[in-house]
Length: 103
Image 1: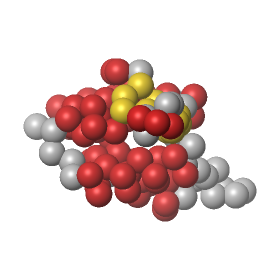
Image 2: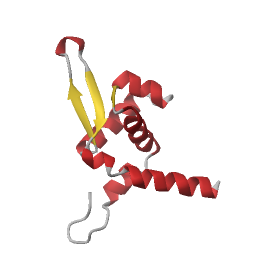
Image 3: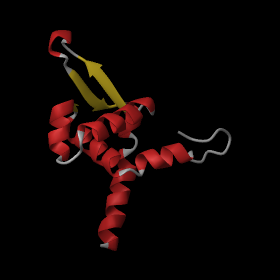
Image 4: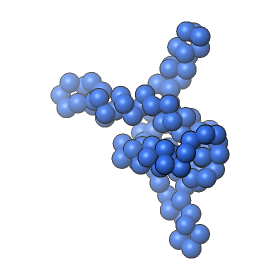
């Protein structure tokens, strides 16, 4: 998440957390605790399946979201924030506060 030696956020990290859908996914998972794909898509109200899949994969790769497979017969998969994902919440709150102030 940071460039080695500099302590600065990498460009990849900044691109990830500055994405509208990523911020919304993190907010929804924080509010719900854990959601299956379709429930998360409904909660987001407008994210296409492809967009949601892409963002969830990026969040998994960044270790911000945990993907848990349930019953194989039902193809049950749920998503939740990791400990690392929970650490992003204060940043999201700060972004929201600035957005309200600038509105």
